[in-house]
Amino acid sequence: MFKKFSPSTDIAGQTPVKSSVQRAIRAAVLAQWKIEPETLEAVWPKKEGLVHVKCREHVSIYTVHGEPLIIQHFDGPYYPTLRLLHKYPYILPRVGIDRGAIRFLLAGAPMMCPGLTSKGGYLPPADDALPAGASVAIYAEGKEHAVGVGLLKLGTEEIRKINKDVGVELATYLGDDLWALKSL
Amino acid sequence: MPSKKNQTPVVSVPASEEPEGPPTPDPIPPVQILYCSVCSFPAEYCEFGSSLTKCKVWLKEEHPDLFDKFYSDDALTSKVGTLSLEAQAKLEKDTAKKEAKASAKADAALKKKLASQVIIKRIERNKRKHVTSVAGLEAFGIDLKKAAKQFASKFATGSSVTKNLQGLDEIVVQGDVSDEILEMIEAGAGVLKGIPADNVEIVEEKKKKGGD
Image: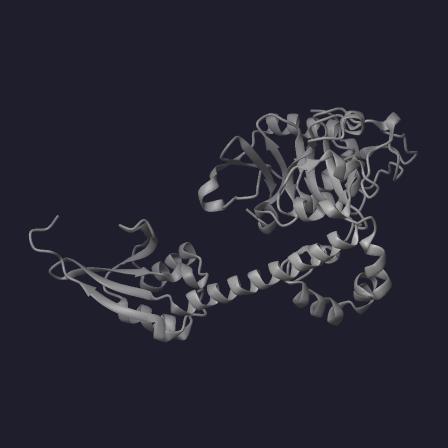
């Protein structure tokens, strides 16, 4: 999504978000992320207006004080930005990739199933299975912090079973153009 | 309006099925992460960046304990983990290549910056009125909007960022202020920092006969 992104050409406009819409976003975020209302309040105080940064191809970025916090594609799930995820690593369920896949992930490739099911990878256990379309934090083998935020193309159980082709699609990753952008 | 959520009583009621971190009335403080000041990645990801040698030097100076953790011998061997030897060798080769490429790119960018020109152009509007256009400032990492604002307040005239015929941004200041702008650039006033005076040129543009 953000492999190539330059603020001067890709941003169509910035508008403050209506408070009713903000309330809807807040509720949705609370429902989708494992974040407590208090913590969300700390990163995004109710008093501070959210700014909607509209980008090309239906990508929306929501910023508070110019700092990107939430990204959304079309009307899909809300993703936290990687910097936010680093601060609050528990808000998204995690999947892990093996060491061989890190290189490709940092080049912006979607994650293939074998990289998730191999020894270095990690998928949540069967009773914690995630359905397709869930947003996940992607961790790397031997590393402490998340390396990307993605969207499950297959459910975690399906990934185990099929073990072929794309398992997780990337939304944002370490070193992409959104990462380089500290403020908007 | 719904009542405030952060006024939950101290006897904490588990708000949701939280596996880690018991729900507390206080916001959970963010995790502090050390970002590399060279490549901006978290320090543990420097090895995948394009400036590993520089990052290593930085980490060794600033955080020797972390340097030992990431780059000591047994850390390196354990890191190889599930990778086969050939894959590891390939990865290292790739990293070296990437690094060389990045440094070459940085060199080229620097050279380009040194070679790029700032052109101050005096444009005649009619016989005794002029505007001054300043082009090429963006190559030196100057925020054109801020620079235009600075000119406007300094000369008390209109000053704006406009696109020229080539589609590049330039600053147009009302009035003939080319010499003053040259002086400002030489002195490095305000946001106009880091421009070598040799790269600045003043040219004049006469209005063509017949007008437009």
